[in-house]
Image: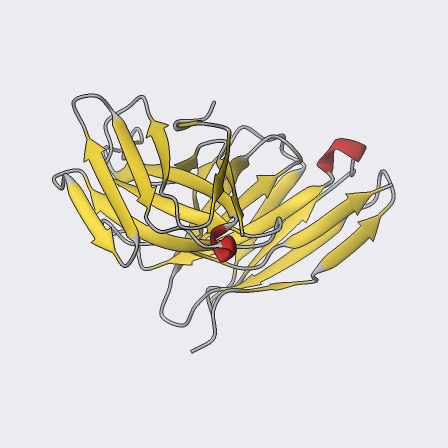
Length: 118
Length: 115
């Protein structure tokens, strides 16, 4: 099952507007990462926020993390047509095997399809 | 510096055949991850290799297997292909598992079509 659930599933806005996407997850995490995917090809890493961080910025991107609510949001300000893509959140939740060693893996949400109209 | 490279870009196989997908990680990365992205199903975790060993496996049947070579490149093998195996297969690499909070970088994927 998917760790992250994203909301909304699709978002359509005009160029210049802000876009906000939300992600909820279920277990404790080490970090949460946001990715962008254009036209069903490879994923581009956008930003990583650690579990002890509450907010992070990168250019026009702003990510918040609320571990008490197990949720994160990605805000894209002053959107451009080139921002049209699918956006995914991914959680790095440490798992422990029988030997007690922790193993991390990224678990992705279903994604939000963002369309920015020129 | 080269990113994660995957080959082939596209692969067409018939049902029952075997498919082999290849991935070369970013130089210095020892962890390789495989994901399946079928239409409408998001990214499903398949396999994670680190230092040549399988470290974690997703909920896929045994006919999905792979390996990691001494140079950290990786192969994903899918035996007895079924129509529902048609998907985009994405490979990602990251620094060693002992380093927490490391980003994973993805290749462009292999589009597998089973007919």
